[in-house]
Length: 208
Image (tube, rainbow, N blue to C red; front, side, top):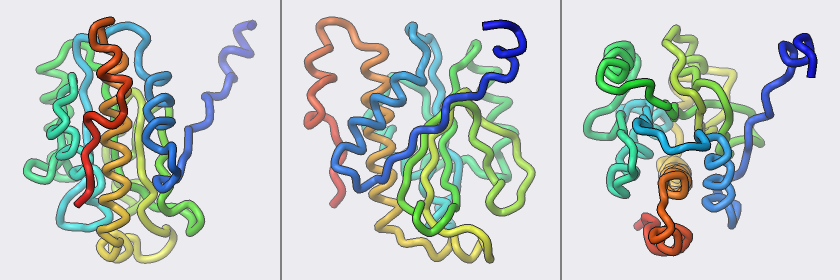
């Protein structure tokens, strides 16, 4: 590949899967495993962006809370108890770079999209762009991103986010948290842990 081809090479398209797909958790985990660094990282940081004051925007904090319950080998920022949102995002990112040496950051957020895309989870290279759906200027977050399309964009975005069904957001958060947890465990596993990590039924959080 010459220099020109390398410069203009497109990034791989983001992976997309509907949260109700029967293999959503497993295939999402496999895709994230490809996006994670090939070698063991000393500092994997997960930043779950959003607020519990809006149903649709609560996707990030819900993922963060579920991940904390699963106890991944990573540092999680952004939970229902301590959300990361527009007001404190800059401070949180500054703190992350002060406390972690060259962290590999995974940005997680809710987003809006077309009607036929609602319920789809996306994962890909590059940062998440929080606030874009509601016309806010916020810093981009992540070496890779994980997002969930929770509702339809194009009109009264704040109102749409606030009136998103909690059932949808909960189910998407469950798939995202479990898929990410298993991808990190697979990255960090040792031979003695391999069988435990590959058993999908052991550690999954179940919805009530």
